Image (cartoon, rainbow, N blue to C red; front, top):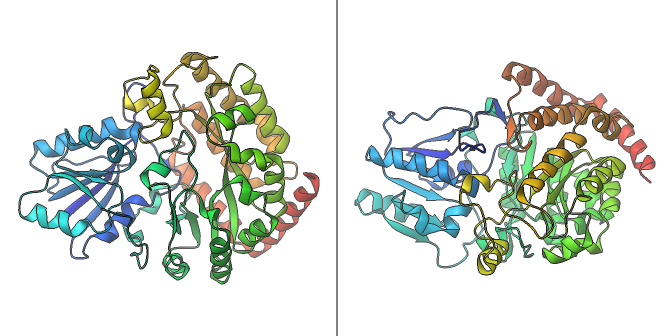
Length: 468
């Protein structure tokens, strides 16, 4: 059977498809989903933002993964294939939260995790009765999951080709703006370390651990890092402030080959953290977390959010000053967005807060509601102003040249180009492909060359001394 697994393209503010030259990093969802199908099936993964969809190409089943901002485009794709008589099944965070909406455009929805459902789906498809909602009755066993189908990913589609690997699922926290806890039932589960290491052995030299809260179980992650060390992989992932303030944990991550960690700082205003369920961050200083990473040769990539109830005209200034003062390597800025499945979405609906109707605005780059102190248009303007300031040349050089970090300079310039094109840096880039194809091997060579790594360690040590 011929199967297409599709990640829909990202719509812009006008609802038109954004075309990229490269995406930033490959996701795990589709290569892992492909591994759940029996091997005799012919499976192709399509990233619509990078390659056109051929509706005339014969296919027996289409699977579409769906995040909220891409839901309108996902529904358009599903409608087109169904018009041609092709059965369509959808999954992902958005349709898991709103399955009845999705069923207006597809034959069936996988609500939640897909393991244990594929055989039933294929059986129902063969019998002509594929329909409705497919859902596991409980949380699936994470032992002995198949390795992702890395062979189906096209390396040329990505600027930073880090093989996606998952060690844990879910998050024990319940932040208002996040739908992860609801999707995973508020639990944090760990795969056997041996299984994770096996996936990493099948991956290449560069790995991105996709877990939303990797260090939630400290003993587990210390064991994982110890087992990773002999693999000599280079990797990035996500940490919380608690873990980033833990010297032993950060040192173990560095010894295991960590290059960068994405930190969810979210806000420098304590009132925002308390009101959004992120008060845990108040116990762990963000600036000390950044210093701790830098002392251990790890680049801090930080996430910040604007559009909280306590944000006002001073918020932009505070974020810009924080980034420049702490010399963060990269800033990933978002606008607070009540996506379906999150507590924030339910609270907004219950309180009658007026939200934008069009899902394509729910991408973290557009304000979809007013706040007590700011109108949506003001939040949009602040978002653009912060990005413009953080990725102007003086800020880039201040954050990356003292001492010099050539790789971070290059990434900042790529992010700067995205910001100027109204792209969120995490999405990808429109920088000419021939330029990117020249830059990417340079980055890889610098990261892997023994002499350069020694020099990098000296520089990182120097910065660790400076940030004190």
